[in-house]
Length: 65
Ligand SMILES: Cc1cc2nc3c(=O)[nH]c(=O)nc-3n(C[C@H](O)[C@H](O)[C@H](O)COP(=O)(O)OP(=O)(O)OC[C@H]3O[C@@H](n4cnc5c(N)ncnc54)[C@H](O)[C@@H]3O)c2cc1C
Image (tube, rainbow, N blue to C red):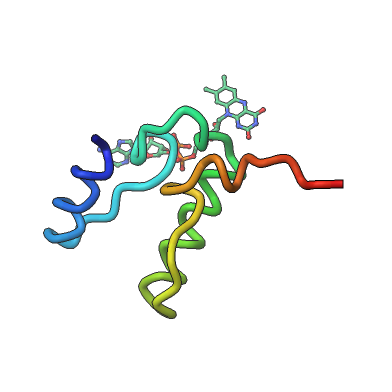
């Protein structure tokens, strides 16, 4: 659902990220919020894809031993 809103906001040049911007409990800690900003900047500047806001399961996965 929120991804639908992101797409619409993107179209308007609005990038909603962070604790209340992305509204995703599982990626709302400080580290998550900071990385959402970093990844957004890298997307805009370098064309990289954003991981934290769109793939919480990936960034929250425990490292394999
Ligand atoms: C009690 C508590 C404990 C926490 N403990 C931890 C912890 O131990 N570890 C951890 O990682 N995270 C913790 N968090 C979460 C952490 O605070 C957030 O992850 C982080 O602050 C999110 O950053 P943000 O920039 O997305 O949002 P925020 O830090 O909320 O920043 C948003 C800013 O936008 C401003 N703003 C809002 N509306 C407007 C407007 N209309 N115009 C202009 N400015 C506006 C606000 O004043 C605020 O300064 C805690 C949160 C709370 C509430």
